[in-house]
Image (cartoon, rainbow over all chains, first blue to last red):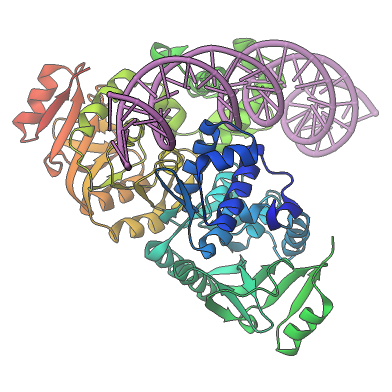
Length: 265
Length: 265
DNA sequence: GTAACATAACATCAGATCGCGATAAGAAAT
DNA sequence: ATTTCTTATCGCGATCTGATGTTATGTTAC
């Protein structure tokens, strides 16, 4: 159903359906619950439950008789959507990133699925200090022994499942970590971009608060663009991309002075 | 087994056993894994798993051949232990506390099981802003609609399952909420106490950051004492106790100028 | 007031997870 | 080296949770 199809595997059934419903709504602009019942072959109740969840995450808006889509920017930066894309590539990128981490270091992670993939690989690099504002990452890290977890608080965003806003930016300012791993929603040959002002705020603070900055980019991110310019690629010490990234794009970034490394699957 | 027995119901079997093992270790000072196998009738593997978990939470220390207890203060302030006590009373106190909250307010909660009980009652007071450093509370609140969640970050403590330390205190300083609900490990007729310096730090910051301060105290807390003095009871606008609290203790607190309210079961 | 829609309240079923032990492999003490 | 203790891995069964539908009970529009 629409352009989401390519990669909706390994996602729970309702989550996948919700993503598809979201796409459907975005495509059609405004649909009724019954439309969705027909389109997805589930009961009205389930449709409503899905829509409630999507609304809670700010993806759609409900009104009596149907739903409308929110601005696409919100949709695209939604976690559920992001989770569907480029799983294998993200893992490869995470493995590459892992090699940059030494025991004893302090690492900052942003609220990106790329960073989340990295979390799974951190358990045996000990001791380690990890700072993040991403709730799923925090949840995982609480179970690790010998990992000092520094949660970056802030205002919870259901859309990103992370903490943000001024309080978060302030918390970040107070830190100074060895490493930062972060991701963005779009990357050009020269710059990293993100749609949302608030998120940009936090990410920029993170850039200021880390000594070595690493940008994690799967190929889906390239060739796209987004509203707010986050930083030039040269602000990052390393940009890690996956193998599926077209060589000419890598070259273009390198021509502009960026350090690009390719993660092997 | 020891003084824990009174109230270990409604806790998962392993959690209960872990609490009992903890108590056993605290009582005997130092025991071997095999001792525990005999005492609890489970396999050596399970004992080790339990001990690993207790060690992760900082309750015991493992060494080859057995385990030793950590200072009792840590044990007593352990979440798992706290959860076992005075469930019904905590719920009554929470219901009472709930009546003080109006839609639109901002509420701060500390990392106490009393506060956690209150969280369950907040879903339909909307809109609402809730700030807390307690991970279980955060987890619950992320699912609430129309509740603005402000997570107070900091260094994660497995013992308390919350965030603390300087970063947390700083995050608290930046706020100013209408209400604060907090609890402590011990209360005398004049003061509130807590064992751990770091926790005291955060709680005191919270006291400074709220307009109206409410202390939630189940009767188990009274008549005990602990190392660090947190604040005089008169610093709280209200102290809520449960019905099982001896009348003379309530009177004593009132004689010292505290405002004490009794929560009805 | 009635029809369409939305929510609430169970009931059910499947899949996932948990808890636990057994066995085996690994480390540390002696 | 041998013994003792610890950890890792697998498997089984109990348990829980999550996802869904159904029916019943609101709500809102007209």
